[in-house]
Length: 131
Image (tube, one colour):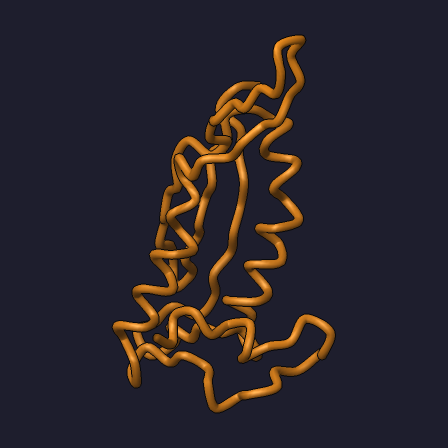
């Protein structure tokens, strides 16, 4: 249940978390931490829909912008890399990924704390497959 509570933990309009006691610590609740991390990582092949108009009616096109997600662990720093189909898709997603990095992984106020297993920092980056 806790993996879905980041919005209650931290209100976007407040500089500090509203409910600090809800922060997920790996040594206290490893399952919720792993499930939350899996939710964050599963952006690859998540369907998006484009709406269009055709002379016979509406046109709906289903596609996915993120082709893959990579996870790298270097010197106590975890890096999450989202690889997007195009540079346009990558640029459109940058603000969301920056928000996720702060919301979930900020050292002091992020919803997830992996420090008990040696991960001191988590960075989110984006790349495009097509240049």
